[in-house]
Amino acid sequence: MEQAANSVIGKSKTNVFSNSRTPTAKLAHSNVLKKETIKVNDKNTMDGLSLLQNIYTNVITACFFDPQYRGIMDKLNYGNEGARQIERAELGQMSEETIKAFINEIGRVLVPSGHLFLWIDKFHLCEGTSNWFRETKFRIVDLITWDKGKIGMGYRTRRKSEYLLVLQKEPVKAKGVWTKHDIPDTWTEKITDKEHPHQKPLNLQKDLIEAVSGKDDYIIDPCAGSYSVLKACRLVSRNFIGCDQKTI
Ligand SMILES: C[S@@+](CC[C@H](N)C(=O)[O-])C[C@H]1O[C@@H](n2cnc3c(N)ncnc32)[C@H](O)[C@@H]1O
Image (cartoon, rainbow, N blue to C red; front, side, top):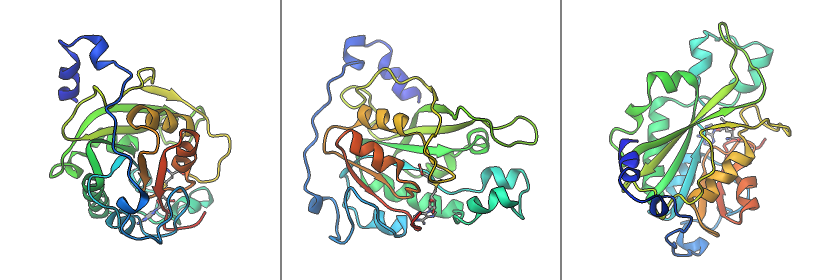
């Protein structure tokens, strides 16, 4: 985060806050995917790690990763999930080793200075995720709080927010890479068309995709759930590659 901040300090605003992007090479699908059976701009039912392993190196501009973790449920000692939690529990939780394996592969497929948007809950935010990135080329460059506009559960305070960690593959830089400068770091957006228990905000994801990528660049989501990232990509003419182990 400091590195990115330092790059802003001492440089002229017009440079760092410029809206012009360094152009990226336009790639055919066959230069991005090793297997023709994986669909671009569509849903794929498969394991996310296999999807990543079938993508060539240094070809993806940004990745949204929303792992299925038990963080909050473990902290609250939910074991025998009640009716409200059964739908969530059925989604299959990821171990720390699996999350690290995904992050390693995401690091491989992203272009240099590409972005990883990682959704985390409040316990991972407080207790840290740095262990996941220790041996990678990722650096944390920002954090966005999503205010869901709706109150949830909680033994003490009731949850109303989730967090999006913004990481960048080295070399860390904003100029020529991040070109949208009106995104606040607290974002309120209510899900109105709920298709999945963990569905994420369409407009925030759309704005972030616009911020870090150009038309026809490739955006991935290896745990796509309701495919909110696919919908966002369609709105801004980016190529989407993603999957979920289940069809929802
Ligand atoms: C937190 S949800 C994602 C929600 C999504 N971001 C959205 O906006 O709808 C996580 C998803 O990961 C899927 N999942 C869990 N393990 C997976 C794996 N190994 N490969 C692919 N998908 C997986 C689950 O089925 C679940 O739909």
